[in-house]
Structure formats: C-alpha cells, structure tokens
Image 1 (spheres, rainbow, N blue to C red):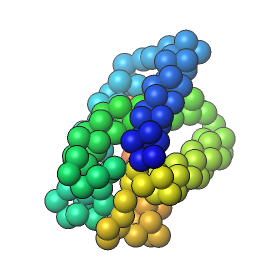
Image 2 (cartoon, helix red, strand yellow; image 1 turned 180 degrees about the horizontal axis):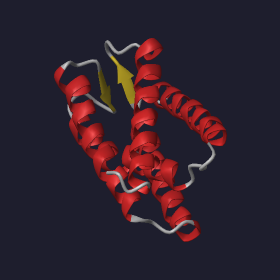
Image 3 (cartoon, rainbow, N blue to C red; image 1 turned 45 degrees about the vertical axis):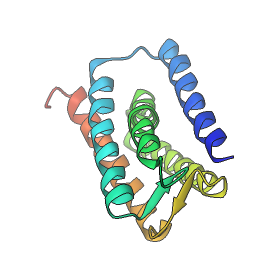
Length: 151
C-alpha cells in the first residue's frame, strides 16, 4: 500500500501541476520557488530522515530514493502550486495558506496510515506543525520578494 500511495500522490501532484499551468502560466519566480524548495526539501529529509533517523519513506532500505523523488517532484511542486494561486490580499492569503496547511497535515496523516511515511522518532505535534508553518512562511515571503523585484 505504501508504494501505491506514494506514486498516486506523485501522479496527483504532477497532473494537478500540469492542469494548473494551463490556467496560470508559469513565471520565473515560480521556478525559483520550486528550485529553492527542492534544495530545502532534499536537505531537510536527508538530515532529519536519513541521518537522524527520525522517519523514513516506504522502507528503511530504499527511503533515500523516495526522499529524493519527493524532494524534487512532490514538495517543490506543491510550493509552486501554492504561489501560483496565492491571493494578493493578505487576509485571503492567510485563509488560503491555512487551508493548504491543513491539507498538508491531512496528506501527512494519510501517508502515515498507508505506511508511506513511518515515524521512528519524529513527533507530528509539534514538529510537523512547526515545519509546515515555517515552510509556508518562508515560501510566502520569498514569493512576495520575488514578485516585487527585490530578490
């Protein structure tokens, strides 16, 4: 079940991304967010998952492969989708971000019950909540800086 959920998640994210690019064309700042997100995600998963051993994807033996795939094709694409549809109004952006935040927690929960993601020391409360809050905050501000031409 764990491999099926992983690859279904991957396919869902990529198909959603492909459809979304037909609605909202990609711009340079979307790619920059994606590239920085990929670097962050791969480093984060490698450090906390592989080296500290707090979690693994699918199986301990092949976890690093799944971490790299997710770090390049799932989490950065989710962040690109996030900024592609991010409202300009701060209040609307906050509501939108909270909805995506909750969606990510649900996605993580589904990953846990399908054993796609296995925690061996990671505690979702508080660490997943802190991680998603931090991630959406830096992605939000990076996006704002990029569209203002300040970064």
